[in-house]
Length: 94
Image 1 (cartoon, rainbow, N blue to C red):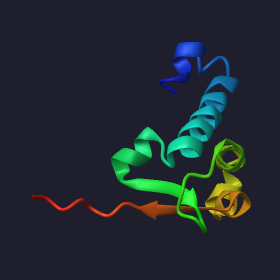
Image 2: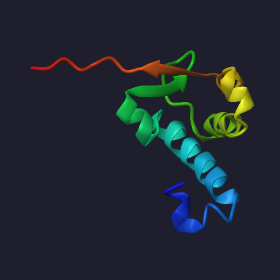
Image 3: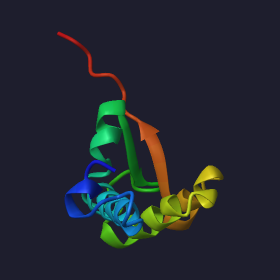
Image 4: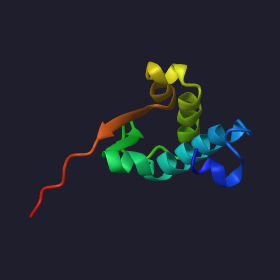
């Protein structure tokens, strides 16, 4: 909602939050394997087989699944895109 407020009034233009969500997920998960929020929470979304970022096309498929909400409740977005959510191990302190 905060980011979509830059482009449109989210309460009036209902498309803005959805479009920002899909773009954000596609860009960040496709190239880096995690969104900024996932980085803070120490999660990553990678290819289920190769343990690497999935690329833009598969991240878009996952983002569309997340945007549809109901498939996301059952993990269908990960199955459809061939992705898996992983937790990042804590870094040892020196």
